Image (tube, rainbow, N blue to C red):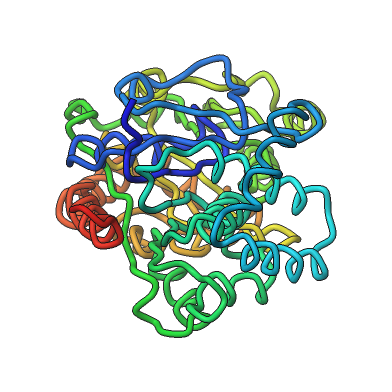
Length: 412
C-alpha cells in the first residue's frame, strides 16, 4: 500500500468529545488531502458519531504504554538510530527530558520512534492535533525523518503547557512547526506572542459543517406557565463549571417549573450527582451520559435554553470556543454561557446570547431573565443563528488549512 504523504497525529480515535477534529479530518479528506491517522490512544468511548464512519483514512495505533508492546518499541528505537535526523532528535529529546523528566515525556519519545520507523518512505510531513503530547510526538518523529511538521492548537494544550515548550515548538531554531493553526483569536494572539515570527500561527475557526445539521425547528413562544427546559453538553470536569450551575438551579424560585438535562461523562460525575442531591434538585435533573451527535441535536431541538458555565480551572485549563455553542445556535436554541476565553468571539452578551459571571446568583438571574421574557430567548437565538451562518461556517477554514498543508508537502 502506498504511504500517504501526510501523517496526522491525534490523542485518540474516535473520541465523542472531539467532533471538531473528526469534522476537520473528513473535510480535509474530501478536499483531496491524503493522510494516514496515527493515534496515541485506543478508543474508550462506547459510542461513536456518524461523522467518524465517514473517515476513509487508515488509522494506526501507536503503543499507548511502551511496556505493553516491548518488541515493537525495541525494534523501532534500534532502527531510528540509522535515520539522518537521529542525533538532532535525540538531542532535542534529551534537552526536553532535563526539564520534564516524566513517564509521559519518555512515552512521547518511544511513540515518535515507532511512528518514524513504521511510516512508509512516502511520508512527506506531519500534522498534529493539540500542541502538547501529540505535537511532541510529531516533532520528534519529524526531526528523526528530516521532515516538516505542523499543528492545530485548541485550549488545554495552549494554557497548561510550559512556556519554554511552547516557545521551542514555535521557533525554527529549535525544530519548531512549519506552521500552526488555532481555533480562537484569543489563543492565536497568545501563541503569536511566543513565536519567533507571528506569521507562524494562523487563526482558523473550526466553524460548523452546516450540511450535517437539520434546519432549526419552528419554535413557538414558551407559555409563561410551561417548565423551562434547559440542557448542557460537556464533560464533567472543573473547567466546565457545572458545580456553579447546580448551585444556581438550587436558587431558582419554587414557583418556576424547570428541568435540566446533562449530556456527557467525566471524572466529576459522582461529585456532581451528589452535589445535586445535596442541593435538593436531583429530581429535576436528567443525567444522560455520553451521547452521539444525532441524540445531542435532538435534545437541542426540544430544549428552551442551552447552558455552558465555562471557567478557568485551577491549573489554567479552559475552553477555547466550544463547538457545542455553535451547534446550539444551528438549532436556534438560546445560549447562556460565560465571558471566558474565546466565547465572546461568537457570543456578544445581550446580542447573541447571555454571558454571566461564574457565580450561582449570576446564572440564576440569567435563567430567570429567559424564563420571564418569552421573546428574549428567540431574539438572541435568531441573532446567533445569523452570525453562525455569516461568520462561523467550516468551509473557509478548511480551504485555508488545506492550502497550508499542501505548502509543506513536496509533491502538491
